[in-house]
Structures are given as C-alpha cells and as structure tokens.
Amino acid sequence: MGSAQETHRRKAPLLSMVIPCYNEEPVISQTAAVLEDQLTALMNTGDISSSSFVLFVDDGSSDRTWGIIEELHAKNPTLYRGLKFSHNRGHQNAVYAGLIAALQRDCDAAISMDADLQDDPDAIGRMVDSYRAGNEIVFGVRNNRENDTAFKHFTAEAFYKLMTWMGTDTIPDHADFRLMSRTAIAALSRYSESNLFLRGIVPSLGFTTDKVHYKRGVRVAGESKYPLSKMISFAMEGITSFSVKPLHLVTVAGFISMLGSIAMLIYIIVSVAMGRAVSGWGSMMFSLWFLGGLILISLGIIGEYIGRIYLEAKNRPRYIIEKEL
Ligand code: UDP
Ligand code: MG
Image (tube, rainbow, N blue to C red; front, side):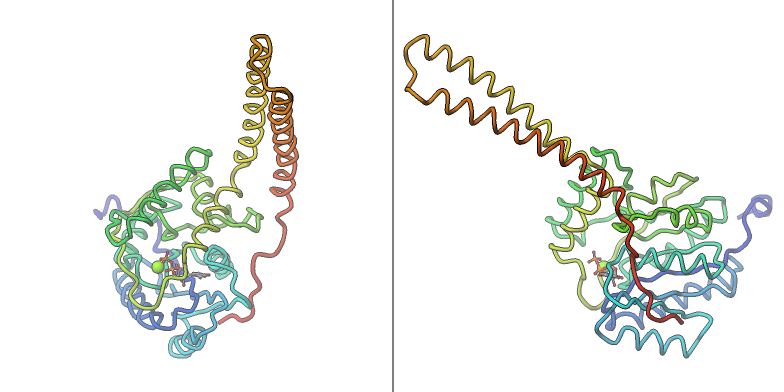
C-alpha cells in the first residue's frame, strides 16, 4: 500500500465477524482464539477499528455452545458478543441475523465465516484490504476441493450448473465466507423472503465486488451439520426461491405429451387403414396420451399460479432472538 493509494482508501472499518454456530462446542473456543489473533493483528496495523468484534450467532444449539459464548463475553465484553436463537433456524438465517445485528451495532463491514475453521482466517486481512480499496462485497472463493468426497464435488458442480441454467447468479465455489459493507447489508435487509438463499441473493445485489481466493481446510473438530438430507433441502430452497422454471417444465411436458398423442392418432389411423389394429387398442392409447397431456398442462398452469403466490407469501419472521450479549 503506497501512500498515494493510501489517500484513496476508505478508513479502517469497524468490523464484525459473524459466526453461525450450531452445536459447535468442540471447536468454538479454538475459533475464538484464532479470530482474536487475526483481529488484534489487523487492529495493530490500523486496518480495522479497535472496537471491532466477533459476533457468535447460536442457532439454537443443544450443547454448551451458548455457555462458552457467555464465558468468552465475560472475559472480553467488547471483543466477544453473541446472539442466541430460540430455536434452530438454519445456517442462512443465522448468518442473516448476524449481518443485521452488525448493521444495528454501527459496523462498517461484516465478514461471515463458518465456526469450524474451514474458512481460512488468513483471508480476513485480504478481504478488509479489498473493502478499503472500495469494494462493497468481497466473496471468498475456495481454490481447492481435494478435501471433498467425489460425491460432494459432483453434486456441488451440478448444483452450480443448474442454478446458472435457471438464471440465478451464483459464484462457483463460494460458500458463505464473505465480506459485506454496511451499504450492501442495508440492501440485503430489504429482501423479505423467509426462505433465504444468500448465495443467490447477495450476487444479485449488484455493487462493486471482488473475490479473494483461499484454501478450504477440513473441519477442525465436531461433525458436519450438513448431512445429505439437509444438503438436498438447501439445494431445493436455492432452486424454488429463485425460479419457477421447474413449473414451466411441467407445462412443456404436457405439450410434448399432447404432440405425442397426435403422432399416436396418425399411427392408429394408418394401422386401422391397413387392417392391423387390435380392436379397442387405438382409442385406449390415444385417450391415455391425450388425457395425460391435458392433465400435465393443467397441473403446470395451476403450479404457475401457486408458484407466484408462494413467491409473494413469504412473510414469516425468519428467526426469534432469545438473548443478546
Ligand atoms: N450451522 C448453523 N445452523 C445449522 C447448521 C449449521 O448455524 O442448522 C453452522 C455451523 O455451525 C457452521 C456452518 O453453519 O458454522 C457450516 O456448517 P457445517 O460446517 O456443519 O457444514 P459443512 O462445512 O459440512 O458444509
Ligand atoms: Mg464446515
């Protein structure tokens, strides 16, 4: 950073690290220590404000996660803060609640990061640097997938392809490790849907953005909270909250089936003319295809309406905060 560049840089931000935690008792103390080191170093170089802090969002854990957060807060009340949900509301809601809390606590920027130290804490400094250079959103992009199983690799790839096909901007290999400025979080807060899919919404906000590459490690302790069933429902949420394309597909399938019935009709007429038809077969096959097509089209059209109502009706609270530190 030369001094000429320095004059154009934004002031050192009041930064909040937003850490969603669901049953992270085995790892959270270590995460806190690592973050304390990182933030202290950035405070010492004058890159972030000395009142920057770590905000743990306890997503309704059933283990001692909240107890540990309380202990950390008692030890250092300015550095460690916490939010506790009354119930498990999922990773996306925990991240969102933390970002909004950061906004309410006058932060200039917030970085969301997993609690299990899979996201490289060394990337924090580079994200802050990019923010100070003028970017509103900085996406952490992993440049390795060797820690993933072949299955996870394949499904992740297919998922990003599908999202792109459906017209949703996602950043490949970006999970929820990212910096957002105050401006970007304020824009995000205007999205009222209750099925949050941040990886789709955040890229669609616009703004000047940047990417920071990092190497994703393995979970330091504890177990993954994303078993296959949760991964599938996460993917479904991503698809249905951004697109009614699957419903269009039903309509298209209906039309194809109708066209098939016309082809069938021609075939039946030819068979009858040539005297090869078994009696009753033709009318049965035709009505089967024709009615099938008609039913699918009707379902598709009803689905379009339900899809629209669904897109509008998402108005429930996303989470309930039970305690704040
Ligand atoms: N998490 C959460 N609520 C949940 C599930 C997960 O807040 O219902 C948090 C979890 O504590 C971690 C992050 O989301 O900080 C990512 O979860 P995990 O590491 O289990 O997912 P994976 O890395 O295996 O995809
Ligand atoms: Mg993890």
